[in-house]
Image 1 (cartoon, rainbow, N blue to C red):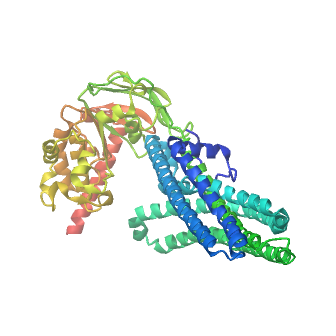
Image 2 (cartoon, rainbow, N blue to C red):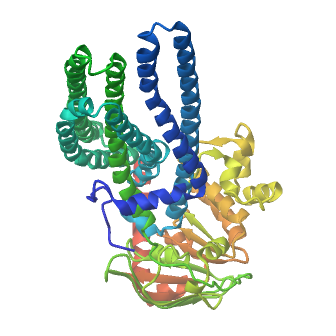
Image 3 (tube, helix red, strand yellow):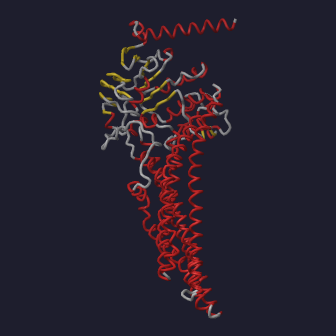
Length: 602
């Protein structure tokens, strides 16, 4: 994948043909409906232009002649045209909104699917709030363009050019006088476009910053309150929010200037019609009906111009949003899935590392030439100081990241030849920080796997000593868990994660510090479940507390990314190497803690 990029610092064109072509592809499945909507829009615009012609005809042929019967007939015809125009406009608006929602639905589904298939490196480098902005706020901006911008621009242009054509056809001299102010208005519109161009990117950038800040601080509200950072957080929020307000304020200023200018030129054009056209009527060179028709046309002429300015607003906002949305869609995963993945139907549980090297950034190696082999059903612990590379090993086995050198084999098959979904289906990872989704407790165990029966689910809960806790809950397995499991204790969440792993019946089990945050009583419950959980499974236990791993078959000792020692608990103690030092350090710390506890109790 490309190096880290700031998706909010994009400075492309105000109108990008390439981006527009990509956006229009989402309308392609509905091209028939779009064409019909465009036809209805043009028809509706033309029907609106017929009105002043009918008024002119009625005045010059029936009002002046005092023909009431003829005037009644022409009034009915005018009413009929208005009704048809209403129905046509309604159908066009409904069609385009329907098509726009369909297109945006497909785009939103595509970007969410793409985000799910990106590797973890993308999420390591991009704040959640910013990514959330891409899927919500930016997609909504594209919705405005696809549902109301693309086709209605055609209608506005048809109206503008149609009015000019009708006025020139009726009386070209009066038309030229009326449009005298038009060049100045075009210049004002051009200047407005330049001034407003950058405000939309600025606003998008500040919205993304605001979302990222809010998401981060709400998620970490306990830390904010614990360390008394409320005032500082509020000050930072105020600064970001003020920048956003200032961006919107700048945009409002431009529109507050431009729209009154349009109205002023509309009034000037109307004054020119009355001055010049009225003189022509008095001299007998122009009919009164023509003068009235021109006044109606000039009122309708400036409406689409103002509407086009609004559409430019939508276009600018959509271009700024499209740049960022397509930037995510163009982000390729760090590694591709195999074109023809090998079948891995039966997992025996053999894991082998052959001279594996891995770095998160450049050549800053966190795993250096690591080699080991786990037999099916073997229980192995990985220990080492913080930053030694223990969690990296589990991430490489699950292929969250791709190693740069060496080879990782699962049952003798190269991990790069197996589909990632197939790997993760057969391997369960239990983390120290358990992530739970809001919803029913049983759904957090199943995680969408309908093959897990109710009995299997309950048996898994019983095996990890979770069921007795579930029985105390209202609604039992149907109990609603809050966001991230806020209604459960740390120990309860970890027991639930054990039940989740057991219910999915993996052949390879990875426990990443899974018992390091629980109290003694809960740890005893988990220890009772571990034997059942690891039975007939290749188990990898990553732990800081060495007292929890004495019964494993082998212990791998990592130090600064290297595999330095390997053996049983007793063998490694006899070597008096890194493991012996870690064990002695923890033993002394436990002794210090015991003495401190006795002194406190006395």
